[in-house]
Length: 274
Image 1 (cartoon, rainbow, N blue to C red):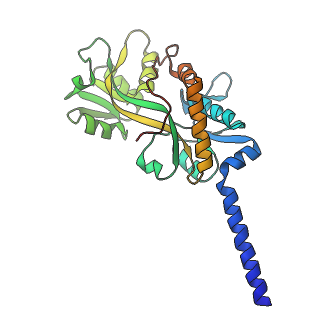
Image 2: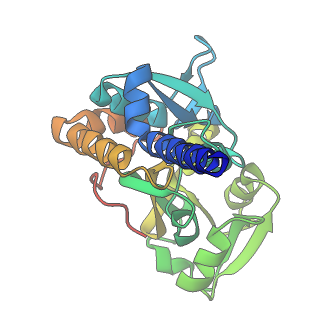
Image 3: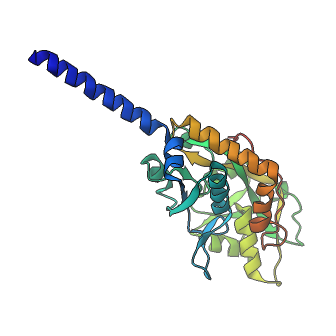
């Protein structure tokens, strides 16, 4: 009888563990039950996620996507600030539901988490002073190009333009200034960063990006693996934002013609591309 009781207790315990595992697996149901979507966002990466100096609120391109997805799910958005280094661990440890923090697709990251449909495509470009001899990207073959030490653009340039003479600097402002001062013929950088630096120069020096870009980085929202219902719901929300025109409105608000970035949206929401 004692053995039977132990067996019964063991089976009951196993059943409870399995039920608990099933409950934890349905993250979408948990989100809807509590009425909030916790989004991991950056607070120091303008214009995608940063603290507005006037309101002190966290705002930006990524933040608006978090709010759009939460609205589509019928819940309220909750912003959880994460660092660039800790953003993926925060998601994997279950402290946030969705990661909206300039998350570029890579096979390594795709092994850790699930990517939603892409909502932004970051162009990596060669910036040069306007009015100079360089008109297209390949005009810089064999020339000096500044970059940031440890940047992923170093590997990209090695594949796309191996004859370029790369000159690495400790930070982005130093690399940008080297191009402006003529110490380098160009600067390889993400397009929004180029526009932000150019705006700070004023009207004395004009900077432009050469075509075509040296590379493209496709961004998706990050979802913890094993949550197919949540992944499908977020993808449907992103597709709905594209169809309604909300995605275009968000782009225009933060990166469009009336901003310092003066960028044109040449991509659509869809399955993320590697």
